[in-house]
Length: 230
Image (cartoon, rainbow, N blue to C red; front, side, top):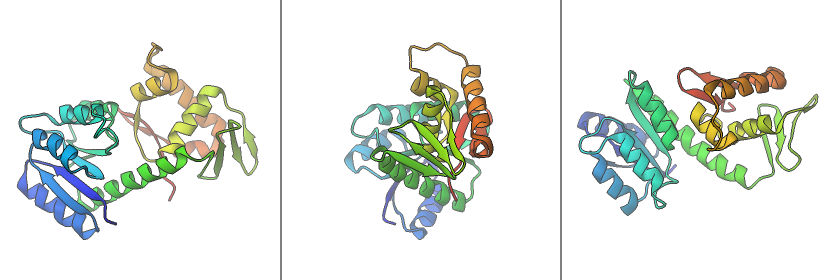
């Protein structure tokens, strides 16, 4: 594995810990200690993934995330946020800005390596899924051309909205989708619904999927994600 990880962290001890463990796992690492340098480095030497601490000097991590996702040169670089447990609001804000995942402090080095690896796999799988007309996961077959969801027992009758939801989840297993993101992607920016709109549709989708519905997991206080296949 030769993916390059840019670590954006102002505490030197944490930088050393992350660099060592990521390098041991086969990653190439680079690091900067503030948001301004992160923005410059991401353009100058684009990494495969950015590990971004939200509590940074000079430029706040959420601002860095927003600027990276709004810049055509860096918008496709996956971002994993590093946050304190008390910063639930910031985690939600970061995910809505386009971050791919988050890790809460204190963390174990092994968790970081696993999360980084999972996001990179997910990004690669997503690229492959975009070019395919069929997704197979957890015993489900999703035929994008025919708008069908199949199991070994036959097809599952879904509405157009439910089909959009299961396709979005299945294309990015492991990724957390906030309710606001789901509202925007599935219903469009012009739709002014409420959080219960999302919850109701996800609940109906789970029921229709039967035993397969358990793979749509609730991330309390944040949103939903589709469980990664083991």
